[in-house]
Amino acid sequence: MRIVVLGAGGHARVIADAILNDASVDGRLDLVGFLDDDPMLLNRRFLGRPVLGSFADLGNVPHDAVVVGIGDNETRRRLFEELESKGENLVTVIHPHARIAHDVNINKGTVVFAGAIVNTGSVIGKNVILNTGCTVDHDCGVHSHAHVCPGAHLGGNVTVGEGAFLGIGCSISHGMKLGEWSTIGAGSVVIRDIAPEATAVGVPARELPPKPTKHKADTRDLDLFMGAE
Image 1 (cartoon, helix red, strand yellow):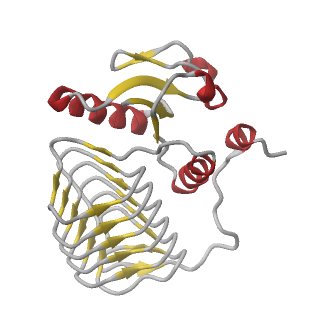
Image 2 (tube, one colour):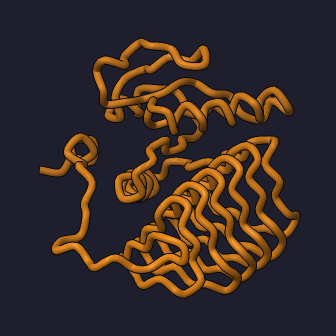
């Protein structure tokens, strides 16, 4: 399966490394290269694979599948949904050194990095990032477009809402519910539910006062790719 990674930054290169490690095990995946809208990256090579052009060049690159290599949750969601609507095959990438229970359901476009553990009964949505060394214990639900950062730990029966961001090294106690597009600060310990779009930090984690306007990523380059005015 020939895969193109959309993006060529650090997160995209970790995905590429997972693809190459998978290929070295069973040859199922083949990394074609990267696409990135930064013109300074054109024709550069990472992990032996070239940056072939911008996002708009995807139709000119022979491929069987794509994976979105963008860390920002909102930008990643928008690009994923646009690609999905165009009929692209959004592949799931799992590093061979991740540990996934046999009955875990992982949906398309999700990436699972080295050292991650997902235990029995858990369901992982579309376009999720389970980053290096994170743990998701039994019967958790991680909804689409969420990002569980390196070293973050979820107890059993935790629900992570769509688009939630769980910072490096945070811990989520058993049975907690994190609202859609919420943010958990690095190293925080969550012992009570977190509201949608809230930011919670500290030990124990407490919600910060809401910002006047919801954060929106700079998606000007993405709008051009999607044909927006």
